[in-house]
Amino acid sequence: MRKLTERARQLRKNMTDAERRLWSKLRGKQLGFKFKRQVPIGNYIVDFICPSKKLIIEVDGSQHINNEYDRKRDEYLKSRGYTVLRFWDNEVLKESEAVLQRIWYELNKDN
Image 1 (cartoon, rainbow, N blue to C red):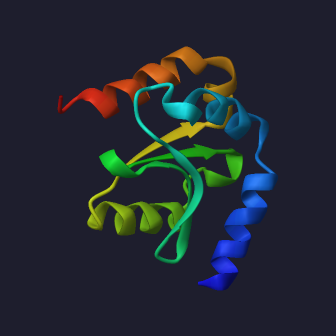
Image 2 (tube, rainbow, N blue to C red):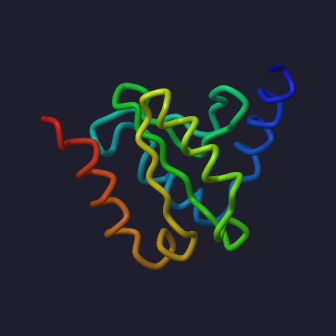
């Protein structure tokens, strides 16, 4: 667990451009809910999480295309009651508004 926490710390310091862009829109309750970044859950580290809504947001590069590891990871997280939204890096960078609308919808759909 200690190793995972240290890895999460490193990831927070070395975010991708897409992660940095999305974090700038999620932090400080800008969408009405608190988000955290690079959080360990089980044996995994999630990019962003809204704990109160059990919503996880992943920002993926091309290494995630048809990735079996990601599929198993999502299954694990969903079995723990989390909803997982995945966006490609280029979606976050080029279609930020659409990405934020999708996240906002997921946060507010039960209200």
